[in-house]
Each structure stands twice: as structure tokens, then as C-alpha cells.
Image (cartoon, rainbow, N blue to C red; front, side, top):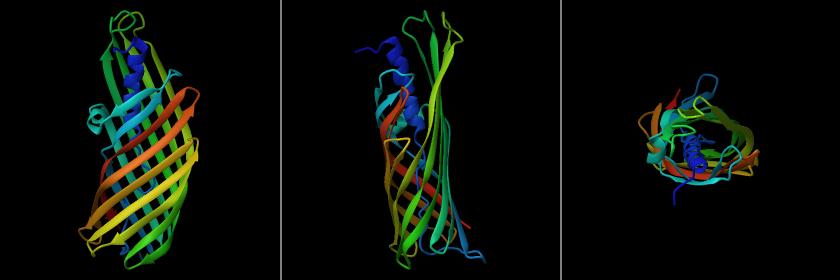
Length: 263
């Protein structure tokens, strides 16, 4: 079945918007082990750039049009990626921690129209920022691992623009977007198998602007030395947001890789 003129634009925009939402969530693969480097004041600091190879499935709606079902693999999304940056940082003192997780992506695509009368080409661009600020407390912290309870707030900001070229409507553009905040909380665990190899996992759930916001992950890490580690694993993130014709109800999941730097 062929998509109509409007539906085709909505479908492409949905895929781009879905891809842009490969956003970072609480405690992406930082997961420091129990042995930390401490400053003279007792603080430890961690920064971890990471890459999430997520596909997406769900419903996405733009411009008040009916939501479009999306089922895109990571390779489909990567073909439209212009720029992406994902990083998390943490400061820890004794059992207490403060963390931030920041993500920015820009995704765009272009396609021709069926007849080229109203417009010959349509370009769609989506920019997404997701920023999380939170705190944590270690319920368990010993030589075998750590169990943290965490909580915080994540801000999402998404902007999508459609620009037309050629035809009667050439030069016209329209944008749609949303900004919302979710309160989230949950648990994160780290377990040392050997001094070099450790397991980590987290379970997070919340709501606010979204009806529900959840995040589950399991990773394994290898510590090259006291300052550098690498982690790999799998992550699934779900969110259900809708307001004023803008809909993002989707699950993203896929492998995740990260580099952990301590100082």
C-alpha cells in the first residue's frame, strides 16, 4: 500500500524523530567499580562518553496528524545521523553521588514528492537534547560491589522542522516540538567478578511530562587500570509522551558501548 503525500512526510519525520531520541538516560554505562581513585578531599570523579546502537519501535506523531507506527533498526537511523554526542559525569563522596547525563543529536533526511506540484523535495531535520541531573546514595558499598538508590529529573527538548523546495510551496517550512520533564528513580548495582572485570545493571522508572519513563540495562566492564575502563552491554528504554498533537510512545533498545575515565 502506498503512502499518501502527507503520510509519507509524517512517516519520514517519525523515523527521524525516533532516531533522535537515542537519548541518554540515567546511569548510562558509567558504573564505576568499588575501587575508586580519591582526591585529598575524598571526592572521586568519573566521565564516560558512550555510544548506544539502538533501534526503535512504537508510535510517533507530528503536527497533530495521526501517529505513525515506527519500526526502525539502528542502521536505518544511522543513515540519517548528522551529529551525536553522549556523555555522563559523576562526582562521588563516600556513599553520596551527584551525576549528570547529557545527550544531543541532529538527524535529517530528504525525499522527493510523488508529483512535484506542491513541492519537489521535502527536507526534515530533528534536534534533540536530553539532560539529566540527579543524586544517589549507596545502600551497600564494600569490596565486592555497590548498590545505589538514585533519583533525579530529566529534561527532554525535541524540535522537528519540515522545509519544502520547488513547486508551489517552495521555500515554506513548519516546525513542531515539545519540552518536558520527568522525575525518575530506581536502583543501580555493581559487582566485581575479578579486580579487572565487573558487572553492572540498573533499573529506573518515572513519570512527569511523560505518562511513563523506564530504563533497564545490563553491562560488563573491564578495567585496564585505575583510571580507564571499557564497558559493553545491552539497554532498553521506554517512554510514553503526548501533548497537543505531538506523540512519542516508543521503546528503544540495542547494544551500548562506553569508555570510563576516572580522575
